[in-house]
Length: 373
Image (tube, rainbow, N blue to C red; front, side, top):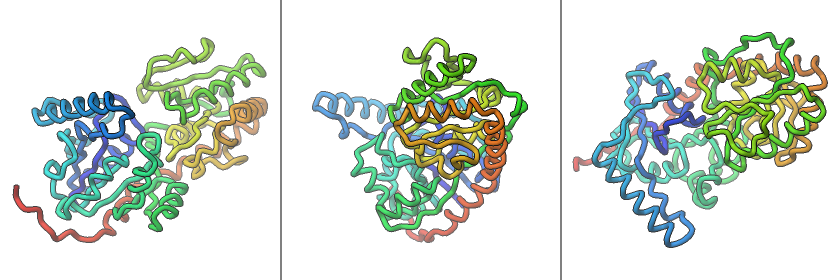
């Protein structure tokens, strides 16, 4: 099978959605499929700007990126992840159909890429939309929702996204849960002997709830002065992070596993909404108990009272109280952590790839051929 994945851009730093797509591309190529991952120089988002000056500025930037793509000035290299040599990584000027190869399957990701894919001729492949979030944080809700109502075959990563697609379009989406790389994330320190250390991903996006998480950590710190916290993220250390909290910028995989997840007894997720919540599952695989908001995505693997505590989103005091209660009960925390490891073992790349292949193979065969330009 010839498969084209389309990502919104080629990034210098890790992204959760990109990592999953590259993992699938590697696995598909290893299984003998022909796989290409495309990244546009521009998505032409100038029309989303708020005033005329920004529209003009954004349009000029989009045209400059398009020219850069025409001139082939961008390196097609994913620097932060191992890519199978059989996977073709390519940067194209834009997502116009002339830049898209003929294939059996073409898979959109971000809502804006789905707008392009829906209108491709049949020779570009059966059209799939890999939905990893309700992406209203990156585009107008009416346009995001329109892509969820589109005629594309839909693949979702979580139960709440499956329900959302059903509500909006009436379609039954294929559900393919995100896997954990168990060669990367596993316990390396005894769960029962871990100190009161809490880790958390920091993101500047408001809906990621970093401010709520820091408030919860401050509350717990007042109750347990010996508690430590480790935040990590792509951006430099934010000014809003208190001095007592350790911050690690863009940690490499070994540091993330050994010095963050395995150094922690609890992982905190304060997000208001999550498509899935991959760092939570990675932390679980490394032996962390979980304190999380009810953000949608983590419902598929965090069970309140079983392997973690779940509170309402945008409720930092409730988050802090849950964190405090778990820090106060080492036996319960240890039991939660052990169950987290067992739960995380269910989410393997092999199982997810099998489900993805079933979805992609259950497609109409495109017999129409594109005419030569």
